Image (cartoon, rainbow, N blue to C red):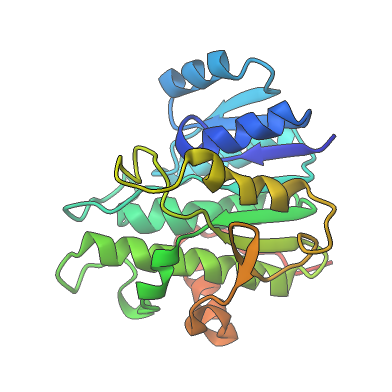
Length: 258
């Protein structure tokens, strides 16, 4: 039995991931944005070890979530599933940062940096990362016209880069990125071709499997098959720039390997 923390597990792929892990007999700690969502998923998955609350649009709540999550660890794996989709207009969080970047990129960085290192880390990305741009001069999308899908795609590129950067910085941790596919969720929409269980399958596999194919690091997967991510994701200089931007914004450094 493994102990696994799944962020954004009150709905969609995250909830299905948590449900599959619970069904397999693992000890699962859930996460929801607010108390109402926490109560709902707690009733749906009563066998879960705990349901933690924290809004990733707030650095203070993300920091608090990391501390609370620590109390329920240590973890064999952490699945960074939480995220927001494309927005029609630029939105700013309570911290004054662009919402897509803060929730999809800065929050998983902060949780990774503040929590004790698990054996495995899984970051939910997207095939849309291939349309992202590593334009670090304007990560807040303040200078250019707003394009929600572009902001989302870029945030998913940054998620792949984060997974690869952590794999490089922490060689003892298996850190990988996953494209779950276009899945029938609230974010994916009714027209998505894939069932939610298919989207959750690879994160569960990477978090728990003893298969040699899953015991790797710094890789990008879709439907349990390793794929080549876009070239920018492998650029170590770009990875380091992303880590520095996240450190500068959050004040939280990614600790070097012991």
